[in-house]
Image (cartoon, rainbow over all chains, first blue to last red; front, side):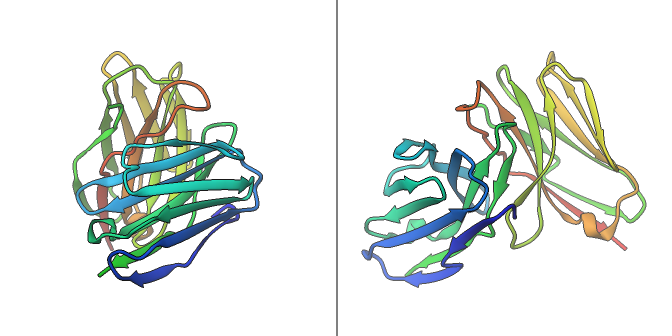
Length: 111
Length: 112
């Protein structure tokens, strides 16, 4: 997985609670991404970062925020989790050659 | 949307047979990438083909790109049970800040 870790790997939470997912990379890649994967929808981009403190929205950014204070860490926050945010979340980094490397995923269940 | 659309959605073959998956997209691209996802795992990059390339090989994988038809195909020769996975194409537009837009994938099942 090219030195990409995600934590936690599994989380169950209740509606309305804040949740933060962490992605950590050791590859020093500039670009980092957060995706969610749901049956019937494939992989959808939530937010991405093109450098420290530089982030932008993806296709499904509503209800999510991100932060990147260091090259190696990219945090995804659900300010107030909803059941529609139950999903598997993947972090990815991108090399200068445009290939993306994915983390192992976080399975989030919002009850 | 620049989303790649894979076809078929599901494919079941016997070990030793070839598997062909197709991808169509809508606008001009910089490159097109194929990824594999084993059940419960993250995606793994397989191969990248640039817009000025027509064919590329990597081991048992062969990718073709037809920019006039806005389509690509992934051929896996002599399939193995271990090739069982979902396969995604991801067209990429623009430069380094262009994003990959993944389709819903082709689910390949290779029976021993």
